[in-house]
Image (tube, rainbow, N blue to C red; front, side, top):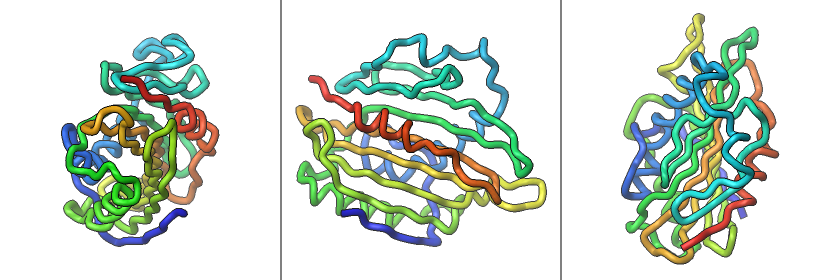
Length: 222
């Protein structure tokens, strides 16, 4: 069962690198920065096409199927994290940009119980009010089993009050996350994120197929 929330609170800066609560609550501004970068110059010869690095991507502790399309390009690829940028484009309202982040992180402060894990994520989202970067936040969280692991799907929508158009209207950030407790290592959490930044007066692109392709293909390894 999904749980839906609306808030006028704000998101924290940065991305957590060792603790899941930090990863979750401080990721939004980092992801927003990624989307701004993705909306800037991205030439075909600057980054490797995703379809050149194999039909399935393996990182430490997990693997997944990447999105289709030659315009998804690899920006960062380490043993523990992959960052992709989608093709930016302009509309009459402003520039659209997109990014995907898949990584594995330490999450020792989170319960290994699925119900408790969901509640902790909900509590974290509800208290996410440390930075005045976003407003009109909406989010939901849903507990699922994926690849035999306890997971939580979250969806975030917020106005980016520090990134505005020429007429002063904020862009909107959309972030969908899949967070999973690694089934064989109690210290690790896998996080898959698909995100878009869109100008006011426009809808997000239909990334449902991309999310299903990435999230549903998640498999865990030792």
